Length: 311
Image 1 (cartoon, helix red, strand yellow):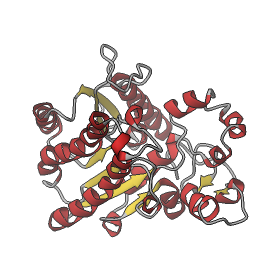
Image 2: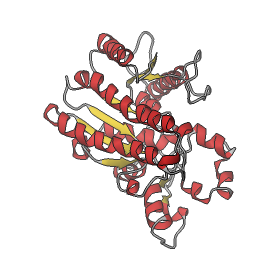
Image 3: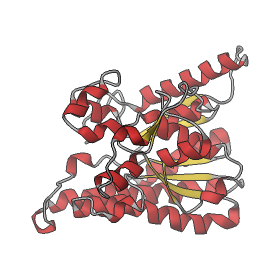
Image 4: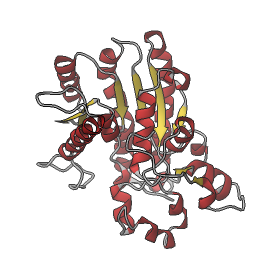
């Protein structure tokens, strides 16, 4: 998401707890905020070269700025927003992709058998952090009409009517839908838009590692997990955020639960391989609904991969 916004020319403040000097409780030293910021800047530079708008000197847009921030520490979030205000004087898009609790999930475990501390920590990581970010960032976002808030979660509101297998996880992943619903009401008078957004079966770095594959060999994991055939790369949700941010009529989505596959159809972009996977259509129709079909029936082919910009 950060990279695609950078490709579109945005200055992206990349925040989080894992830096090259310190690893968060998630325990993945391979993804840092500095690395992400560098990818944002590289994408912005590549887009400028492709458009013929390169040149020397300092250029606005397409730049990543890494700022170590624990979003559960209000003073750190407040300082972050003050810095953005000082350096940019505006905030156009807030992507609340705050989580970090996968290591705490206990599926198929009754609530009375759960590790209570771990379950409550999930609420802190996946609920409190979102509210803290909004509390401090939204006064800057509403200075100008047209601001966008994206509450990232796992599962659409419709899909999450099916129990997610662990009470604390289920609650945590449903709350962003209500946050977006509430913020849509609060932002309306300021011309702002708030949505919740989910990827499908995501080929994140962590998921690829879990299956012992790479982005190039990801199909090898289908033998172990057949539903992985509908998986999508992180590019798809990135292009979804970019499309939303650039849509002058984005307010029509405000308060709604959206998915990367749904927005790919709406805006016409594709995944990195040129297809449009409809993960939630597949799970709702086939996995839960019993329709006689396969993942290939829910991965619309395209004539050629879309450009990095997602058009």
